[in-house]
Amino acid sequence: MIETEQLTKKDIKNSKLISSVLAGERRFGFLLGDCIEILKEIPDESIDCVITSPPYWQLREYDVKDEHQSVLIGYEDDPNDYVKNLVTVFSQVKRVLKPDGSLWLNLGDKFKNKNLMLMPARVAIAMQDDGWVLRGDIIWDQMKGTQSAQDRMRDVYEHVYHFVKTRKYFFDADAVKIKPQKNASLVNGSITSATGVTGKKYKEHIAASTVLSEQEKQNALNALDEILAKMKRGEIVDFRMTIRGAQRSYHSESTKISGRAKELETKGYFFLMMKSSGFMPADVWRIVPEDKWRKDAHCAVFPEELLQTPINGTSRPGGIVLDPFSGTGSTVCAALKLGRRGIGIDLSKSYLDISETRIKEAFNGTYKLLL
Image (cartoon, rainbow, N blue to C red; front, side, top):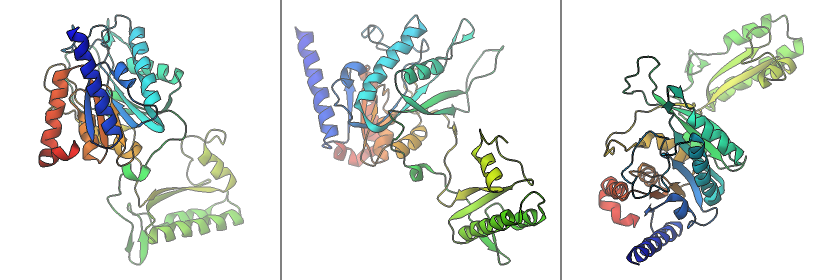
């Protein structure tokens, strides 16, 4: 009877925390319990972005194993059961995620009997089969590793998958673009790109071309002049021009495969430009894991740098970021620092206590304003 009353009190507390964060009455909340059951308490389509790293299959032993054996993910004997359990969790995530929301899922791999299990790929394919749209596979290069294996390469990376519910979703490209370190400039009266391109060589290639018609040459020169004018106006900082017969197409010469090849065929040229607003990050992120909040041998901690692009790019200011396997609270802490609200769920009370301490330390004198 006492256990039932305690459980009821915990559920009531979680429900109030969820409601207060959703209503904007407080900016964050950490919820103790099984993520599937707590996710059921969250209303449909109320979360802007989910970023999480669930327990990896048979890789870590957590301090809640005995207490929550029936719901703990990562201890399954059969890898297929692990995949099914994660898909079940993320089906609830899909329900609470807004139609234009994003899910960022970090997973590491596992060797079993010297056989690489490809667990991230297994989960990703199962998620696609469950209706998720996979928009990207980010390679998180952790740049370090401690490994004693002598008969294979040292592994230093993990996957971060970007899933969405529909083909049309919120993405703030300007918020995540990498700004160019150098702008175009005037040199001896001529506009020069950030890497020293003036367009002179391209004009010589166009004039000397034996494969472009006279009309195509004129069109190419006019287009080049417009690119140089954009550079002078500060709209772009760098460019490259590919001309039929002078440079090869990128990726493929087949017009069925390559849009660039199609442009060469129909126009005789195409441009690649770097706008002054910057360029998109690549799909390899070189970020060293965080050690400060790694409080035990089983605690894997997101570096907050890893979270900045997902939060800035796929959640609006003031939106709600959720982590159903929150650990020591990296996702929620990063969300708060970037002007969002945050909800974290975990089975471990000790991890949630660390998370609260982390928020208090990060916000110091302004901590009470979050409540």
